[in-house]
Amino acid sequence: MNARTHRCGELRKEHVGQTVSVCGWMDTKRDRGGVVFILLRDISGKVQLTFAEEINPELVAKTRDARGEYVLRATGRVQARAQENVTTTMATGEVEIVVSALEVLNTAVTPAIEVRDDLKCDPELRLKHRFIDLRRRPMQAMLQARAAMIRSMRATLDEANFLEIETPILYKRTPEGARDFIVPSRAYRGQFYALPQSPQLFKQLCMVSGLDRYYQIARCFRDEDKRADRQPEFSQLDIEMSFVEREDVIALLEQVVPNFVRALQQDKRFADRDWPVLKCGELKAPFERMTYETAMRDYSIDRPDLRSRDLRLSDLTAWAKGCSFNAFKTAAASGGLVKALRCPGMAETFSRGQISNMERDAKGMGAGGLASLTVGVQHAAPLQGAIAKFFPEAEQRALVEACKAQSGDLVLICAHAKDKVVHAVMHHMRTMVAEKLGLLDPGKFALAWIVDFPLFEYKDDEEKLYASHHPFTLAQDMDLVRKMAEAARKGGEGSVIARLKAAGFTLEQVLGIRNNQYDLVLNGIEIAGGSIRMHRTDWQQDVFELVGITKAEAEKKFGFLMNALAHGAPPHGGIAMGLDRMLMLLLGLETIQDAMAFPKSATGRDLMIDTPNEVEDKLRKELGVSIHA
Image (cartoon, rainbow, N blue to C red; front, side, top):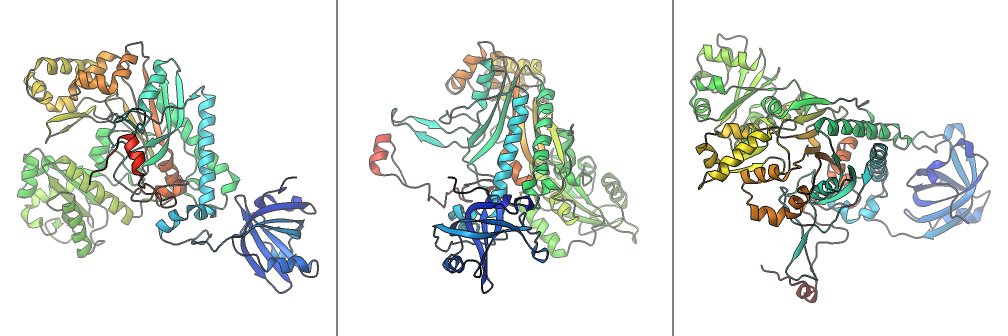
């Protein structure tokens, strides 16, 4: 015989008159003197149990010992509540169970945290007692939404003839941008596995194997610096496809994303939730498209938040070269960048103290400062502010025109010899101003593809090129890459860049090469990224040459991939979407921890099971591992 006939949250008016059995945890108890009410809770919801002395005094006496979080089994008849007792706060609010039998399946100590929706406590206390935290409705609803999202993804991909294929967890170290987690081998002392940062190389091998369409809900591991939207282990939807171009992969994601958003919106289990995904309306394909160059020009970041799309930046570098203010003029003349943000109608919005804090933030990011000017209406010169006196009226009016500023506006300006500093400062200021203007509505979803990224990035201090995405990304102009690689091989001594310059190539030409990368951005956060890959060994060797990966190094790190490509690899490409980060945005969660069942703390510890922890000396000796302070 089953312990229960129904879940607590399933009972409705159509069940009136039926005898049912339910199991769950005691949520609350109310004793009205002769009548006792218990709310019984399980993952489906709550139902009211009613006990009356006039019906069964022994059962009423039995409820006296029941405490919060006791595990109970109740059997009784479903009856309709009196109209004045109907409640809309729970789905079973029109009915109750008049209990005829009650069994205490287990007792419980008083939990360290309360099982309530509006719990406010130390986040680390929640993590330490996660098994209690997961009893709360917001957490259980999150896990239900996560499962529904993954179920929709699988359905969409299965229908498109994809195979779900698992790839290894014990992996090999590869340069993918973050630090690896390392696992020592007992069988091969002194040698190590790495946990995969992503299944990148194995999914490419699936394409070489002729599997055509692969996907996986993949576990990934990255030993990154901690942030609110990062965890050392996380899940992603991983996809790879053969015989495709960029548009094929984009079109696929433009099916996957609206489908799982629609699945959450139509799921009746979430009717009580106040999630952004339930307010954003239908997401329609095709999504907006923006080039990397446009994103950096207008928003100073390659993942712009387009909920505040009209809050654009202006490039004042050309104006600054001829201006009278030395700080701006010097930055522009040295090849740097000068950018401005027009803050509409905000001339009087920020206090002097707030402006000082913004200047302090800019200095903390490496800038010399942050200039602030207001556009006035009562003076002959259009600008007011500490540095306005350094600009003749003609320069002021040219600045106002370049920013498209109007009376009552605030203009923020940053100048620096390094573009990255200016971009970091102005993105920060733009976000701050957008929040102040109320432009970042969490119930509004602004999706956009960012495309045409640079193939390479250059680090001045190392005089070295790096792959901006990863070195397996196909360039849009492989003929030019081939010519540069040939020049680099023939150039002799010096850095790759020095050899390219000696051959007549400029740094601007090198950094102007675009790749076949594409990122999907939602409300200023990258939720998916991918690219069309190299499928020819000669092309792959050319890119390795330009990023300074020698043949010996390539053979050691990627020999298996190069060997696979040499055996007839098809043109292929793919994409990966971070499930935890996506869910965090859909549900409006404050941290990525709340999008996972068992996350790590901000410092990377599992507080519930207390790990990482030390291992005994005997095991370390078996593994050939020693610890040095």
